[in-house]
Length: 317
Image 1 (cartoon, helix red, strand yellow):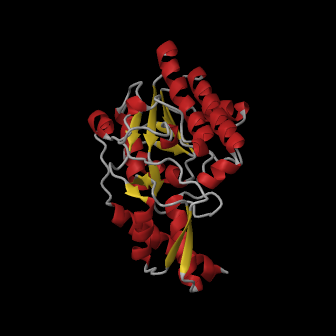
Image 2 (cartoon, rainbow, N blue to C red; image 1 turned 60 degrees about the horizontal axis):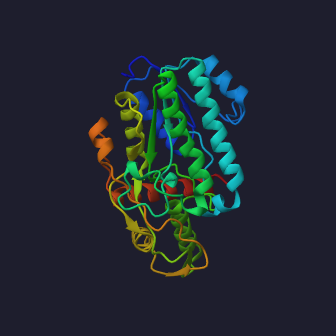
Image 3 (spheres, rainbow, N blue to C red; image 1 turned 45 degrees about the horizontal axis):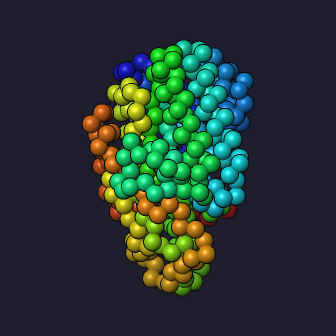
């Protein structure tokens, strides 16, 4: 499907990943990109899903809207994370089917993988066990979009694809400590310590877990490429093809930000899934996606963006 001349609806298009995805879709020729806002269109409500599709009449829907957060937010809100994410996706996909949308792109999560998936995670291992407990409700809610899409493709011939991005980071990320993921949380901790002149930061867990991180602009480009060039039932990983221990990540962020203080680990807090790293060969084979942003370069851009925003906010007070 060429995106040239197409009208595309991007749910969550005003968010972190969504804002970059909107740019990437426009760059590939989308004629019009519609970004619904939650205040006007709460996708948890079925009528809002029906009205959105009826009023915008899209050729393509890219579903990025989600209720997300780090380990702490997932532990505190497992029920609402499950319900909100499930209902948004299931109802929107049904309305897209009923109203004949030409293509639907659902974007899942690495949290859908089993807790002890062999590394690197291959899409064929997605059903080999239960997800890591701290984020299982969220991961399973998003995983149901894969099931629904495959069922709709089989019964109705609906063109639905499902993508599985790894942990994202980059400019525009969420730095709120109550809901942020690991990179923005660490960047904020370090900057707070530098500004206050304190000599230590506290970090959850033991630092032994590993993660893979994908720069948000690379992820957005992968979504746009898949939207245009992939039509298949199988889920596809989007990642950078590497992993780093959290302990090494903390050291790297500290070095890039000029922090030389103490790191105090709190082993009473969970590490989350022991390892996360993806096999990204399917994405490269099916639609030519490969991450191009080096990790240190991506971290530098993220840190610079955060520091600029922090300075601008302080100046405006």
